[in-house]
Length: 198
Length: 198
Ligand SMILES: [Zn+2]
Ligand SMILES: [Zn+2]
Image 1 (cartoon, chains in turn red, green):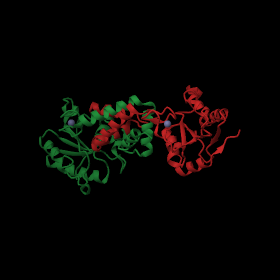
Image 2 (cartoon, helix red, strand yellow):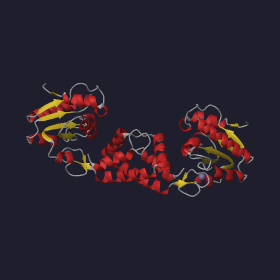
Image 3 (cartoon, rainbow over the protein chains, first blue to last red):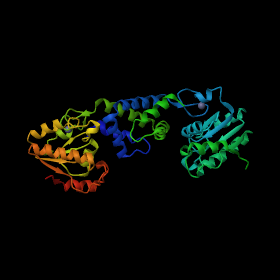
Image 4 (cartoon, rainbow over the protein chains, first blue to last red):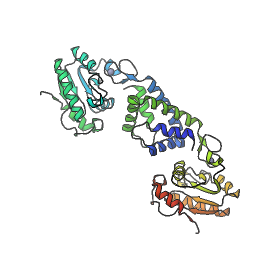
């Protein structure tokens, strides 16, 4: 077998859920009938890796210092929605009519893995809440044990700054990943979010 | 969302079995924790697309005009094994102790799709058999309707040149893809191949 081909198969294994067999299929598929698409993917990867960083306001992926959403004058700056990942942010943006802003934690509290408030940018979030513009922090972490613990921490942080914390309504499947919830359920849960009063 | 990110997600969809959700996961995964691996994949894709062509002897993928297998003095040139795809060739090479040579059809006869003998390089194969060195043509097409039709055509072609055609032994699951057969079954079927006498 060609050693460039072996390198390509090996390189595909960096992708999530791609084992040896899938990597082989991908390499063969590209070389057999998608050489142009393969080149496009090569260029898109190189450009994205080089130029896509994080927005300094919300920590979402962005090519610019401040992302388009944070820079938009048409979003409601009184509402801030905290999510674990860019994928969750995108799911909410696509499924709901939400017009506020976001804060992307890029993870969830997990002390055993060394992920504490600092790793999630909660110092930045705290400073943001202290600015006084945000009135409601919509906490959209996943309905998992760590997601709930993170939500609890965030609600305390919000209250400490006089900001109302709220949580998506029940309806999300327990233990599931928000990113994979169907649009209808997610939209309903988002619309029925309840203030956290404990 | 970043437009470079959108381009990357879109570009991932060129891969087999990758829809919008998987493409998103791949893009986020690379940007979140595999930027180095992403660059490696970018380079491997560009290099492979540019430099990997087909061996003029066996039609397998190769960086050189004649692939390493065809150029090897330690392979038995009396045996030639015809397979539909490079993946099938690799499966046989990895599962069996076969030390002969290969011929990669890059498809199977499918008149409705315009795939005839010429598209499968059967003129090249015929010339190869006419050279007189090959004594047995091991036909390892898939046990599907089109694979069987291709096998029948190949066995006629072999006989026309005084070459003994053989077929892998029964044991392969009907309708299945050779590439996904477990090593043991494939190795057994390969070892128990029978001459075609019809
Ligand atoms: Zn932003
Ligand atoms: Zn070759």
